[in-house]
Amino acid sequence: MRKALVAFAILLVSCVAHGDDEPAMIWIIKGDTNNVYLLGSIHVLRESDHPLPEVLEMIYDDAEQLVMEIDMDDLDPVSTMQFLTSHGVLKGDNTLQDIMGPEMYAEAEAAAAAIDIPIEMLAKTEPWLAAITVEEMIMNRAGFNAAHGIEMYLTNKAVADGKTITGLETIEQQLGFLDSLSIEIQNRWLLQSIVEAERTEEVISELIAAWRRGDTTFLEELLLAEFDEYPELHDLILINRNKNWVEPIMALLDEDDDYLIVVGAAHLVGEQSVPDLLSKQGVRIRQLHEPIQ
Image (tube, rainbow, N blue to C red; front, side, top):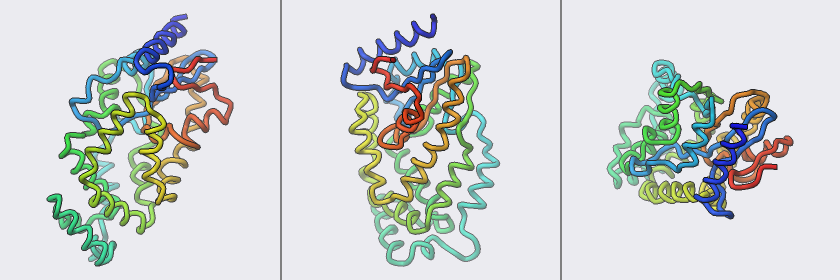
């Protein structure tokens, strides 16, 4: 009875907050004995983006356990650094310029200089790691930081409240996905990150605004449009991982505890998204504003 009342209260808050035709970025799965909530996350936020919506706090309170892409409370910095050193640092005399080629590197160098990013500091870095480094620098300058993101916020709450956190993947697996990208894709990703740096604040601000109002149509257009030119990246970063997550998520429906699953918002929109794949497996899943059958 308690779970039914809590679920009803969460549905009510969601309807008040978003309106009848604006779903939240939250899905609910009704197991035989539990609720499993699926939250689309924004990995980086500004301090000013807090407090987060009340409905998010409510589903957190209802869940006994949290599941995230990775267990943020169990990261081993030594192991992560070892992986980055062995997979993200160029061997021998190779440099980033050698990997990118003189023409593309010159374009990246000029664009980086225009936004005051010393690309020479990335000379011994694989393009995928260079892209991550550049994007983090750009986001931090604009005030966006993973320390303010939804995962870290919920991790800190869960640790303080003694809630169990588990991960669908490890950090090494996630970095390995990027390391396995073709050099061509890595190079184009790095160049695009630098050239489009000035749009970063605008794009992330639009993303956060759409997430807050539950505009899944806009989120799908904004998030998935970036992959139009990179089908390899789309499959590796989104589709393949979505498919890998379906079985462990379905296994949670046999548990007694309520769960909150937190994954990037891009995993929850479009065809072959996590909700789409679960629905095709016969799972009863609905966005939070919709009635639960």
